[in-house]
Image 1 (spheres, rainbow, N blue to C red):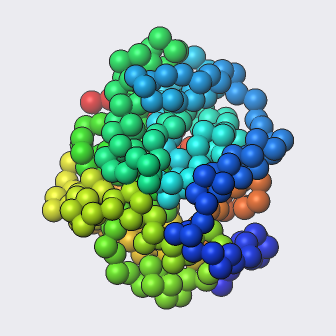
Image 2: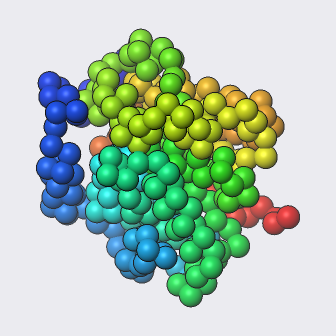
Image 3: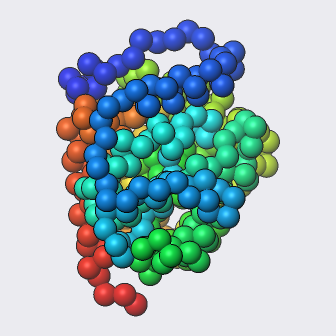
Length: 300
């Protein structure tokens, strides 16, 4: 059953398939809506930077903070630094970690591997130049929501030593998934994500070979051992629920320390709306506590 807060936030269905929509116009509308939002938490230092050609935005609540590489969602097609600015400020304030939000190139203009390459480039830049910006680069974790979670997971599959920890919020992890939730079994239509999921995958990974690549579909990787510890957050009424939870189970089976947390009654998109959803605030507290414990753990 949908939580009352989720029910109140359900968007009216638009019958226009994304394949027929004006992607540029939708991007502009998203950005304009975000810029019009007056909710902004003050963070000590916010700066737009160039990470070896990849635009990033740094949110640093204090000097020498550990680093959270933040990769936004939007189906690899939509959203940018502005659409996630208010939430990144909230997350930096709540965790005390410095966020480096990555403005990766988007599909369909730039399909795989361009978005993943940009995330990898941004991470390499953080490690090489983070100390110049008051960051503690001895501890770098990654966090992504939706398609951003896919990119974080893909980065960890590509380079198992890339991150100290990975937080994956409702990650799509199998382009060829045939799970019940992807078929909408037991999942309420919610206006945040619909049957257009196949279209999103086609924009990012347009060929069968790309879709089957382990760094695109991490759930299909033959071996997940040695990946960074993970926190996987899913939503009960989300098409991506089952594959995210299957990935958490695969990680655990491979010996990766993994926690899976399902937000009951929630839909896709709840994570970055703490002003609307109690579950978002609870999820952020869970992430903040996890990162606090990570920072307090003795380094190897």
